[in-house]
Amino acid sequence: MRPTLRFVLCGSVDDGKSTVIGRLLYDCRQVFSDQMSRIERESARYGTQGRETDLALLVDGLRDEREQGITIDVAYKSFETPRRRFVVADAPGHEQYTRNMATGASTADLAVVLVDARKGILPQTARHTRIAVLFGVRHLVLAVNKMDLVLWDRGVFESIKARYHGVADEIGVTGFQAIPVSALTGDNLTRRSVSAPWYAGPTLLACLETVDVEEPAVGQPFRMPVQYVNRPDSDFRGYCGRVAAGEVAVGDAVRVSPAGPESRVESIVVWDGTCERAVKGESVALTLFPDVDVTRGDVVAAADAPVGVADQFQARLVWMHDDPLAVGRPYVMKLHAREIGASVTRIKHRLDVSNGSRLAASTLHLNDLGTVNLATDRPVPFAPFEESRKLGGFILIDRATNATAAAGTIRFPLMRAANVKWQNLDISKDIRSRLKLQQAQCVWLTGLSASGKSTIANLLDRRLTIEGRHTYLLDGDNVRHGLCRDLGFTEADRVENIRRVAEVARLMVDAGLIVIVSFISPFRSERDYARSLFESGEFIEVFVDASLEACAARDPKGLYAKAFRGEIKNFTGIDSPYQPPVHPDLQLDTEELSPEECADLLAERIEQELPLK
View 1 (cartoon, rainbow, N blue to C red):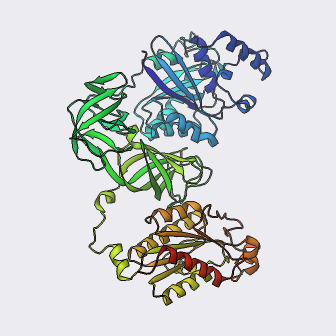
View 2 (cartoon, rainbow, N blue to C red; view 1 turned 180 degrees about the horizontal axis):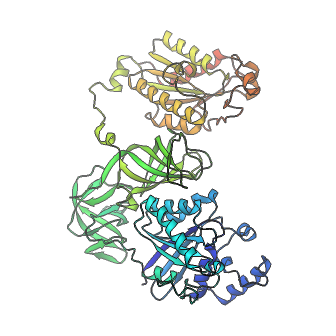
């Protein structure tokens, strides 16, 4: 079987990326005759009459791309030569599609950075090089295209090569191969050019065929993320996954992270039986003796070199979501085979890709690159990305839409992740609750401003206190006088506001209190995060429901009037969104019910949940 090279072809708009791939496919005889006939017809249709067949149409599969002459999506093509099989990703050149380029780079072993000889090094050249390096691409080829349009001028080529050297040195790239090419004619692409006798290096195809991208398995410690626990019957339990690094043999001592004891490999099961040894890249099922507790997302590693475990990291991100990053907002983090809750706790800086400078930033927008501090909701096994792409690369997923919000790489764990531990206390939440003759609870009221939350919360607090309950009321306005006085009303500040309040509420529940939280809390993701902090049955989400028109008519603080006049920005319901609960535990319609009736209904619900002990 021929070895496979995965590479990404990137560069600025109209540098000729699709034509390069089309030429490679054509010259390597990877195009069927009927396919070529169709391309010739479409070349005439899309305005190439009188010119050579437009080989870029072999790659530009989207109608919009063909009509505009640009690449929008990542297009994958495969082809073969007698020496190697290739999978190439044609990455889009426009800046707004940088996230697509990151997708192509994430699985690539090599990047071909294409430059138009007439334009030279552009900002996108540096941007794409940085992203390629960020996602672990270790081999770079600078292909200076359209050399025929500058009459194969050696000075032009050498000038572009020297400028790219400056970009590569600043990024930390130790070396690259520079090749002058013409995708239109195929010169120095698949055959040597007689027009450039001054160039003695390999053609692009020869470079791709001979570059060594294999990482040696010997010397690396064994690592395998567990993708699936296979238990077809009571006599077999196999831990399935692909070996990410090193090698493993029957009898080897291994340890399962994050917290497993040491064990030994009893057998290595493959699709057609068993084997004595498995190396990087092979998919296997391991059986262990003695058997240990292993779940999906754990990592089986060599016992003398276990993987690291942490819950706080410094990481690099490429932001891929239309909505900006909000510090503190909860996301789902997919790291190898594990999915955990995660949030960005701090943005260290945003990277200016044009010159590599670090810029202060409070958020990241679509296509931004930045360095952040990241926290997960529990410790996870990992390795720095420089050591293992498999164990150090991750994506963040939006909890509400399941869309990919960011792709990132772990740089290192934060020291405080290892130094700060949960302190086990003798007096538990259950003991504190029993002393108060009640079960601790968080009652979370959400709704628009002037919907009636604070009034209902105050009535409920008074009624529960009269009944002998131990309560505390956290009100949005009151908290902003102290705990959250440094926060404004931007989306990022609202996210941080709710994060702080949720953590305080958790501490109060731990103290055995019934804590009543009255906050607009406009975003579902933050309310879901708040719920995740509590045990099952401890959190009641109450939707205080009133229409925007009804709330504006009440307007006890005059805020709606100011917002309609433009005097207040980021006002929920007007120029900032409110996402109502989809399935609240209780919904109170304050247009139909009085505050007293709402408080009574809520008290009855609490009484059902928490009978007085």
